[in-house]
Image (tube, rainbow, N blue to C red; front, side, top):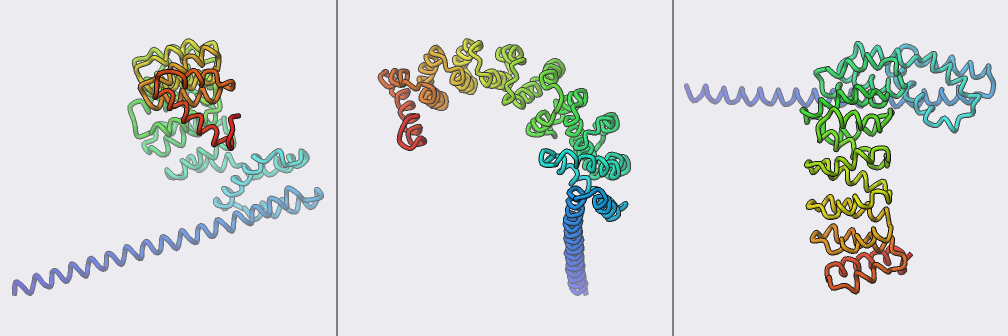
Length: 366
């Protein structure tokens, strides 16, 4: 009797498990179908609005333009999906503004006033779920809604990390320095927001980047300082040279490397001595960055320093120095100096750099 009861229990559990499994598959299938239908509908809306917008914008006469305008507005109606798609396509039109004749901008202004996208996205910001809020703030930034900065800034204290991130990105795009600093301070202790995310935040910033770097240098830790310097290294912000020079003496390796790379990127002969000092640093990544700076400077004394760097104990530094010499020594004076020297590793590095340069140029030096 006991054995029979266990068999019934086991069979019941198996049947229950199969029912749950089937239910889960059915639920996933329904979700998949709904998602497929939603995507198909959005595609149809996209195509229809694109067609109506083109017809409106390029209508040959004022009367025909009004007819197309009325058709577009009627199609959009009050449906959120259509309003969002129309707003998205409006932004795309603005991005290709150089292709639009000036007389068409009056028509675009009329469309903007009728769509009123900022009010539409503010409604999503106020009443939407976390996904809708995250989406709405980015769209408000697209439309340069600077008068909504205070409202967006409130989301920086939201419990949802995605909402906070998107709010911070929107505020950065709107050039709100205070908010970027506030969010950066959050990242000092909350590593949920990655280094890459911070780089995106700083690169999206549309305000005075020099001023922002100084603010962060004064108020944030070395991690944030190094990150913002890395974000703007390619910008060659000469006004920050003094800050970079100060950072080169930092005990924080990450900050020092960032500052040397940023100063090297400037390629200014005025900082050649700083590059030569960095070339003797105990950290080989710092020395590698200094090689890049000396290559950009390209003076005879910089080339002499690069010749010395071909004897560096670190392979990466030797190789980079050799490539730099081959790249900028058109008369091959310094190349010959290395090749005729006693350091076999330095000579090998330069030979390898020469062979690569010759192969890249199809058999000759250029």
